[in-house]
Image 1 (cartoon, rainbow, N blue to C red):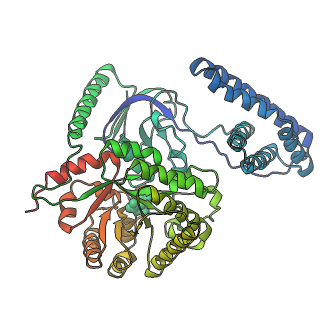
Image 2 (image 1 turned 180 degrees about the vertical axis):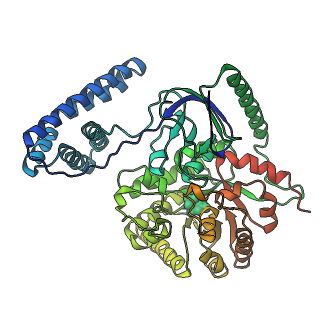
Length: 539
Ligand code: PEP
Ligand code: MG
């Protein structure tokens, strides 16, 4: 048995086989070649190999899921032999004297774009297939392999590190726990683990040859046990059962109010990254959604999500929440949340860089598309909007102007929309210091303690070496929280917390005493925070 230590970012016990996350280098470089015919032969060899791989997948799928689903792999084989595709690749290699990887990637991009532009829904969907076969051939040519995990049953996922763009592609139903070598307590992988209610560890230096081995993750003590003996396994199975019993006890709090012993009430909302998280919001009896990280719609997509696509997603969430508040945060990309098609420049200090509202205010096309989608969806539920990374009154006014412009457009087009509250995230010290003025401009504040702590303590939330310095209970933060809530109320706005600190039950009483109106936490934390509220007596 190998016993390794790490830092726990979410507790709980997971037992299952290990699946190691593989990162393929998918960047394609353009290189000049001298012998185009030899390069074309190399391409054909890779194409045949790709077809062989697909044949294996076809036969496996045929056995496991049946003819209809297996057919996809056959159609991919046919696409690889499509004459337009093959001639496109050969032509680029011959005329531009470039390497096969570049020729395949370019042909794939061109054809995918062509399909995506077609009106026919079926043909549009073929764009994804072209990308898929292209990646397969490029992977074989460059020897990189595909990015992802090779698991067919629920597994403990081991990874060097996971970027938000990689976690969105994971089949979450197959992940029992996250264990990473790098990453920090406040990274989005940690946030995802909390949302999924599964144990997660960071800073674990695991050996290379562990794929498929049985393992136990103990989030409470920050350990992973690889190849455990029978006695250890059976004691952990018991521990897991006890945890499940405790979780069942919490279930009894469903349907109960978030009220202290002396009668003070607070709203408990949930944080989500997409439509699929709504199930766990409802399951955990949240009173609303306090933070919909809308950037995940952009991260999941290969190109700018259209107004229609966004409208469909927001409308679905609003409808599923059936009149309960849904606060949609406008696009917050940049820093660790990179989206290739935005083609953002590499920056010296990405956390202090071109991100969030700074992108929206300079890319008004992107901003307007998103606001139109949100306003249209507001007709179907109780939607509010909040803007991230605000540092000035001027930014808030510009955001409000854009919201007004969108409403005027919709009026002219006779498209209905609801009453939409407008709020801002308070996640920069600048916003805290002018929160008295900001409060007069908006309906609500939601404190992003993850970034507020990063910017106040001058500590990169992504840097694991600094985890011990990242003191989320720092008196500066607690003083700021009090100042924010007082200024909000004086200016006629309500105030909540949607950063991870909101779920810290050791502070629940303090948040209530400060006067916060709302806490928005991972769905899995709702009932635990409700329990803490109900055990509090402020009198
Ligand atoms: C925060 O900064 O606290 C926050 C809620 O936003 P994110 O974690 O997505 O940056
Ligand atoms: Mg933030």
